[in-house]
Length: 252
Image (spheres, helix red, strand yellow):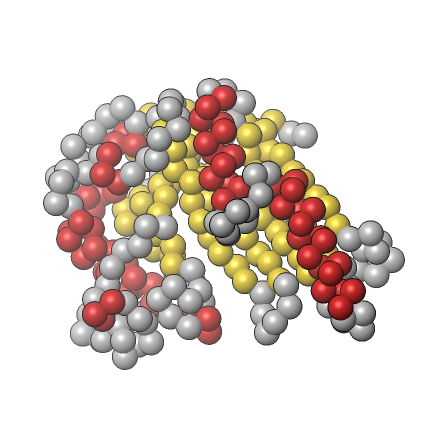
């Protein structure tokens, strides 16, 4: 088990300051932990077995309550928020392998491997904000696998959700959506006059809207649209970043 020292330059507004030009440098200790389980036959037949892998950070300097909130949210992502889902990553892994065994029992000639891989990337870890990106890559049969990106944003002191409302003045939503649409069209190489619906995107009322799947990096706020969210699987996912510099005048 390795201990990482993360040194990140965080935009001041994400810390205790509201001035964009001011920055703070924070070094945070955390441990990367891993859990792995697999079908009993994986070593002899890797083409027809199930593997389950999750790697995530454990923030050793946080209060136990905050760590519990983080783990609960992480588990929710791993279980895809299913009702009655398990309360631990280990239990979810056990269920994943058992589900494959039942399918294999019903279809003994099935020559297909299942896999579940979740990896986490710490974007920001300061005394005010924990921001973590969680990627999940899985396959349980069908035409293709699924890849999703989710975020966990927590107040480092109490585990409360860390929201955009915390540092932007009321009424920011329309302006932020305008900036988001500019970045979205740039990423998709769409002209300002091109209809989103014509381009294959399915926003309500054909009007661009930022989603709630966002997080914070040192260069700006990142929003991520997973496959199927605003378009068919063939169009893939879309990530946009709104630089903090473009939000000047909106900081509290």
